[in-house]
Image (tube, rainbow, N blue to C red; front, top):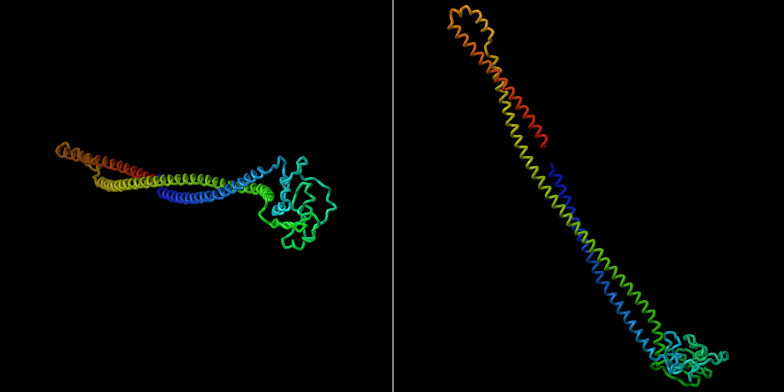
Length: 374
């Protein structure tokens, strides 16, 4: 038989389990909402990185097309395509060489650059002027020309210009040119050659920037993928948490059903116990009544006359019987009547004793039954 107290404990434990499962599910729902928010926030950097990469690649394609369009001059590659200049010195190189940058180094061209000695005897530039060759990587055909062009600041031009030797010139980063013969060209809008050099430098820079942009895009896409994975993980956790919550709810329902059944069984047992107790009480009263009846019968038996005295008297008066049949018949009738009464009383005592034993046995059985019900 189920114990209602134990079933009540089971219900309380199931209620706690339901509450814990509900709280856990709410926590996972919060984590899922946070993961979705993170995923939404991760989309912005991806779009920005993709837009930045697209812009850089578009710029690269545009510059590449522009450079390709002017790469050939009369079927020959201009020397400008073979030059690399440090960033910021494109205007200086373009102003210093001008249209000569469009001339090829191919000897088969009618106008071309060539190597004319090693330039060992060429004069040095004025002190404070660094040769343009320090900032330019070019074919050897341009070595003497670049070695005789000094790069200066605008403020130093007036002091250094008188120190120039024939053939030398000074140039600022902005593109102003000061020749040995006194000719001065101010810095103006950069020429086509300077623009091409600037575009070539920009193209080189774009390679690195595009690689960096691709790395950034890859990182942001990885972050977005991780955010998406986090959503999947939290969705799986939420499904599991909800399963546990539903299972706990079923367990609670089962526990409550079991408690109700135990309480009904306990009520039935109490009612049955009351019925048995009432029956035992009635049997006890009947046994007590039988005990009184047995005692009364025993007293009556003890009060009955002694038949041996009657027998002796009968023997003594046998002689009288013959002469007094009326008295003999009366005496015999009295004897037989008393004998029958005694026999009846004996049978009654025996029946009472047997009935009492039966009631005692029933009481013992009822007591055992009550013990098993407890």
